[in-house]
Image (tube, rainbow, N blue to C red; front, top):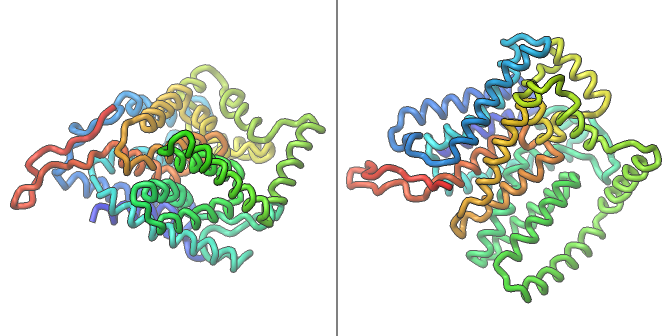
Length: 410
């Protein structure tokens, strides 16, 4: 039952795929918050797990969560935005990060979550192709406002994309353990979706990480042989795809434009702006500015006008955005949480969790993986899986736990 609540929470974060744009963004945020609260109420009612017995990196989590709360007040102290508006604007991300603690208490079965993720991934892929077939009047999600074909085809959002990324690493992990070819099937399907995302940094990150994950257990000689075969195969296949030429030409055009016009890349500019220039003083740099309420508060309107003009979108560079929103102290704490999760010893069948955390660490450089709540929830589930021990106590004859649940620590 608990894992079903988690799945419904994930679906709520994307408005249950938002058929014909039934729900706007505030409604989707509200549904997500309500589902997390429902998970919390359910978790409190059950007595199988106590948070005090759970072991995880408490200090960085404490610093980071304090940073989220303090930065909410900073928005009202240093910018023309009321405290009530600031709390509403930042409440969703606070709830999204707090989902980690709710999961520890709720204690859903990781195996059941993974099985459910495959169904969600199937729905996500189906939704993508339905929207592609119905373009420009997409059936699911918000209206498509861009008809840019510079990458070879229309760029359409793939809902729950982080789940597909997670399952790619999971499939490689399972294939290495079981040698079953069925895992290669999903690996191929997931690889196709990575390409169809038309996101260059995701393609590069996933190729590199999957390459190293596949070669991880081979001897040096086998690594060289298999590596050459993989690289050659991927090069031949990818360079013959119709979109390869368009993506290559787009990249070269952007580089030439930056060099000839002596203009910096828009993401480099966004990094400079959010990590340094946008901070009015040392206090906001240390403790953050809070979240601007776009289009509602005075600060939110000013912020929206300037960033839209410069194309400095806050979701494009989420690590830099964390510095701006929550402060450098909270950002360092979050970075510590991610690094500790990466280096935490794991069982052989849990190695995919390490590669996912490396992926989101790198994604944060040029995407909104640490900003959008409907991507954060997946990462919080992965962190929960990392710190949840499989030994949840021995069940007695009457079905009650005879031992306290144990959680692996650093």
